[in-house]
Amino acid sequence: MIVRQAKIEEIETLLEFEQGIVTAERAFNPTLKKGEIHYYDLAKLVESPLSAVFVAEIDGDLIASGYVLEKEAQDYLKHERYAYLGFMYVKPEHRGKGVNKRILDALLDWAKERGLSEIRLEVYSENSAAVKAYEKAGFKTLLLEMRMEIG
Image (cartoon, rainbow, N blue to C red; front, side, top):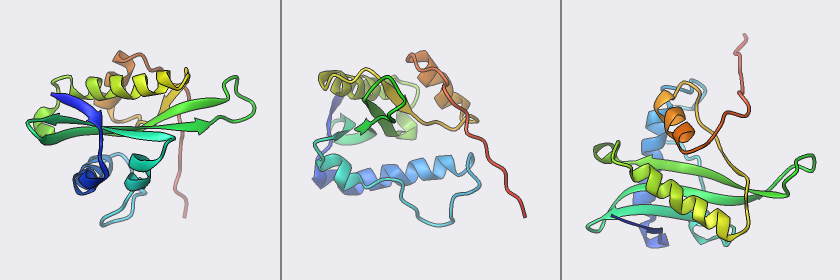
């Protein structure tokens, strides 16, 4: 398995991965619109100097992805900039084999190379498998967003 930065020519596969994420997250988020939706501007994330999209590849086949984005922190926080992670996807047949850990390691290395020490991501609280995986990697819950529908 090779973990490397994605190329713009791979955008179609990256868009398929995005729809895999959307499909999985519909079970956790009743506020998502029906039909095809997009969370990310993947072309921008691939090409921007402030972000990187990493993919895992086996025998020329892309099997996983994730991105890291350097962001400015709020003035009231002790860090000025931080790395935000997203677009974490592993094809179903490759899950449970440590692929996501390899992507995560590449994302964290990218952040460290830029001198970033604060790393953040979002995960649905009901997605226990993902929560457990991120806790195993060293993440801790910081804030729980709550919602209510009225009317």
